[in-house]
Length: 213
Image (cartoon, rainbow, N blue to C red; front, side, top):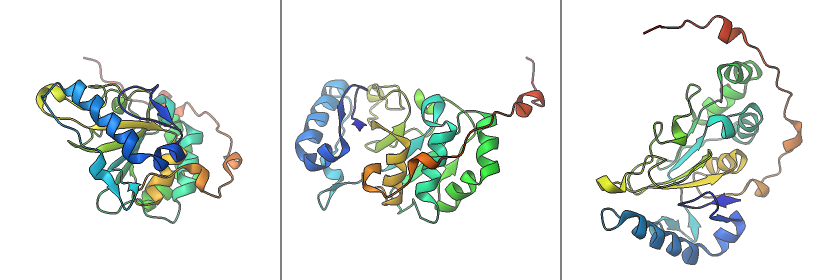
């Protein structure tokens, strides 16, 4: 599934979107014009390349997207592959320091970094536009919880307009492995049920250095 701008309820099956790209994206452009109120423009139809949708950014982050199982599955897709093609880039934010430690321990972070993904510290910023702000006119696919106007970095009142679509981490990884061409995880031959169990380790919190202001 994919939730197109500008609301988490604006959902389609990815295969349905790919089969009706022009019609569906044209409706999103109309919504963008209403949101922007003449202060900015968003063009999505120009991102159709040879009948497929080219995405500029992927983000797996926050309490929803950055959990252990999601990141392990993304690493499983991207191991030995490249997620960079000059126009697309991927950032991954594990949901907590213990999750980050577990991902480092089982090698998932190494696999992601080897594919070209950028690993960020545990931070909920992408959910409200404080991390990896989409470029003006860009299309970002994210496993986060929101894609409202002004919540993912787009500032139409200041002439900046971008589009954020919400997707599962597995489909984001599949898109990354395909050079940023929108791809459903169901197109992959991957055993999703084989993710290792997560073991919580609170040592990062016990040894954390706190600065008091």
